[in-house]
Image (tube, rainbow, N blue to C red; front, side, top):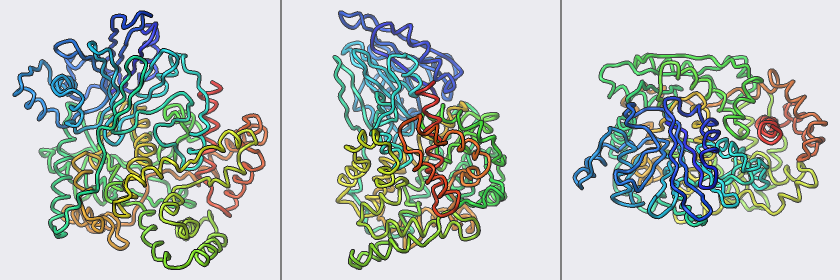
Length: 640
């Protein structure tokens, strides 16, 4: 895995150094720079830079930027092409010769042979840039679901890109300013949908897209999308169980290809446990290194996440891995600013354990496999089950349904400690959205600050600046694109396009690469996604059993109690920390004076949210953490 950066403009050689220095943590094995001849009368040049974390072909032959054999294409590449060996044999049969064992060389040969249709041949995770010396065109490419990030900015007559926003800011050509639309979305969801970022002049290349920059014009083209149009009916459950197990086995084996030490995260949940079980089949007798993070019982008093440790130990008993267990005891007040810097946006709760476990794993390993994506592919989230339950209320007229659910939500407490913490909190959230129509109901389950809450929260200036934006517009556009699919598949499609790349995958990439660690996600392999898309939806969510067919498939390789255990989210005990280690920081950064000085929110409303959360009247823990992270983001990137 690597860090890439580049620029089309003036003084490129002076600017590329600070850009690469800003992403040094993404690759410490090598650095490379390539600069073109002048491309126009103004003297602009194309410049590509690369920071290397050597994974496949660790020899100097894998050095980048890399030129195609005919010198036409120049590549800087972040990621892995898992099927590069098969592609190399196809290309050899077509007359191509190879001098290295790297997937980057195969990527260049494929583009030379097939043009941009080559991207459809790639099965992997990647973000890369190619300069075409003949057409004088820069092309940015991002993988099918956005496993690897890629940002760009077009300012004046200068085009800049990088694996991280820091690379773009390092040029000092882009002034860091808050994007009002992205803020409006971020407060709603805890993240903003692609292509927005919190920075006004920085965009993402959306997942599954190519971006061409030619003659100062940008052209965006989609090269991949998941389709639910071909559901394979007529196959029984046993056939699908075998298909799921065979596909998981194949993609895990595919993603174990590396010339460096490799292991896996192990939460004791069905996804990571299934991956470790498949890795064990292909380890040639070597014990798989696994890493688990646990949470102290006292920190779980206010939280809804159970401790994973006992389940991870249970899986380890069966598979006999090289097991490493880490208890989550961070100096969170000191760690949070560091995470804001690496995330380039306010972090969510999972960022903290993700960074800490990545840092620990990096002491012995370079590549880790993760169970990320199993919920999006096989319907594992509670909100998907809640949608099914709430549909039972649909026959009740709105005039009765909505007042009833509003009353129920109003009387339930939100954040009190004790055994009923999770059931009461979830019941309250369910009641708030259950009475709404299909799309609004699902969007409601993912909403943190509602439009009404934001209206009260904003200062007069920022209420006016955000009034024109609909934070749900991107989601509704994806619902429209999947309108002909079954209801459950509509939900999976929207999550695959929004929640997955913009929150989960971004957090995984930024926190692992901060530790110089590569993380691979077999459940998001193209083969797995496309197979699951052809599956009847009732096999994913059967009654109240989430990920039903995946669990049935893995009964043959994992203990039954692990397979059917209660789902546990991968997060941190934010609720406990906000009442303990982070409370002084809240008092400082969210004080009336600090909020007033920032000018975005009303101090009294921020205080009301904080107080309602501390009292237990409402579960505003993630909202308070969000406001805290937003102030740290301003201090890090805007105030400097």
